Length: 485
Image 1 (spheres, one colour):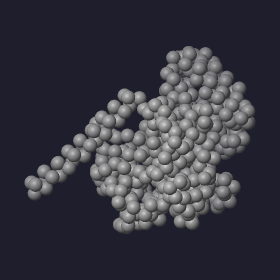
Image 2 (cartoon, one colour):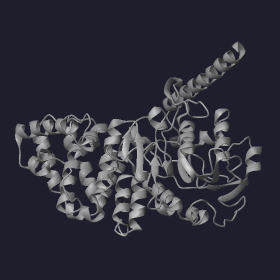
Image 3 (tube, rainbow, N blue to C red):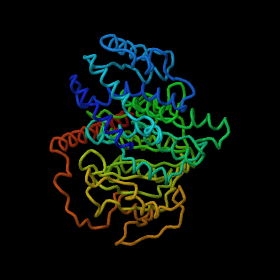
Image 4 (cartoon, rainbow, N blue to C red):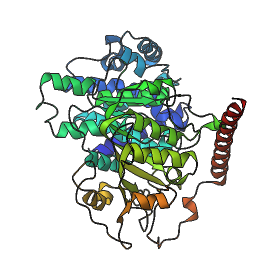
């Protein structure tokens, strides 16, 4: 069986959950509670795990030996006990976990179905990768909630290949989601160190417990991330690789500085104009991406590098947006922008970019001398199930980017007819510091289906207006204080 076959089998188990009245959007959240117990069992049986992570009462052999109401009651009690475990990582994974299953026969059916999967084939590619496949399947099918902005794996893999994380470096994702960036970085490093066996025991321990750190606001998403990391052999500290907290609040200001930051922050404006509560960001804003971008610049070590996925509005928004971009180009060398195709995220019409930059210092000025822009948006296929995004779509960009992780390779400006061009800092300044730079004519007219529903556009407009009002009120308050003084 291929990994895709197994992912489809797992996805088909959602029919059992539906028969028990579980909502479509809750399928994976329910399934993974049981699936993690099964995968932990398989990892121990195959020798990947030296010892069980779960206590005896929560092991697969215990569940599979039971039936009927005794099984369902034991499973409910197991989830409650795990949520109160003395092991902080297990307690975090199962925090507030409870099953919505009401029929014992449905739980029995799930257990028998999981036992019927060819786990030997699954283990060949790693159970962590199988789990990743299930999360991606969920994102592509639901097209809402956490899946709405699920970062496509080909894009993550391309970014990792260009940033080139190295063993011994600390890597952070302040909007971790299901930990895709962190896991891809770990996979990249393991592939170049014989699964860490080339390293000393001290360095191996560092990679497993201290190299990666993420933060996630949503408890259920963090649960998926913690399971994902453990299945990939990433343990993190006592709280796991991904901590629960709001990066735009006090928890985020406490995050350490890192060698590399990779992230796809949530899109949109804080609802009702309520912006970040942090007081250490230079520019107050209700725009979440502008706040995350400031966090990333602040929390990069000097010489550190970053790649961050951001929507178009961050590149052209005036006012605070322009201030944040100027601050970025002062403190960092913003060497490359990749204009991504539309339709690669599961939200319709979202236009995004990847910004690649290297931190010079918090006090630096004029660090960016030129910005290279690669247009992978104009005249590209309409991506979807019929035309899936693949790593191959990034091959020309990767070649143009070059081997140097900080964009210092020899590069060629391809002119107005090409996809890769260089713009001096002076040229960017003449545009009002807008980085929304395009030059290629898109021969294909955009389909109406590429645009969001009117209700989505209306909500975004309201959010933007609320954010603008909040910014104006802050300015008026400051002016009032200045007048009073």
